[in-house]
Amino acid sequence: MSEIQELQKPDWLLPRNIVNERRFCDAFYKQHYLIYQDGAFYSPEGRLAEEQVKTMIFQELQEHIQCGLSTKVENCLGALRYIAAQNTLKDSLEEKIFTIHAANGEYYLDRDEFVPIKHLTRYRLPVNYNPQAPKPEKWLAFLSQLLHEEDIPPCRNLWVTVWYPTPLVRRCC
Image (tube, rainbow, N blue to C red):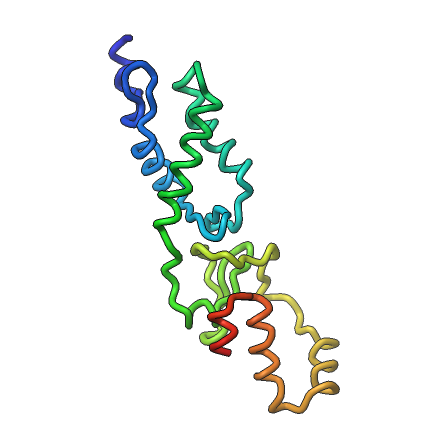
């Protein structure tokens, strides 16, 4: 093997094309920032299908592995499940309750502020937040006909439990 090829070899690739799964998963995690919770992978973009993660692993490995690639992909996927499961969502419950995760960032209800940054969440809406969107006049008129003014905040709490369908959030609202 030439010196140039040796320098380009990742630290997770051992002699005779053996993959150190722990090192591979650590490098993969740092690059993609994934968690594994309740049988699914999540990235800052939202939930990832397992086939997507397999494809991402395959793309990383294919440059360096010629034989037994599918087995190595499956082995790395299994190891990644365990490693990513150790990384939990670090958001506090309060942040989760008062944050709407949109496709283009996060809207904080308690501060009435939109930030175009994505944090890991299991509940990202697949729509972009548009601060210049017109007020939903029909919806607001419907609410005012349907509910008394003091009933709108409890109704908002109900919507939060729909957006974040976890037992912990249900108990808090």
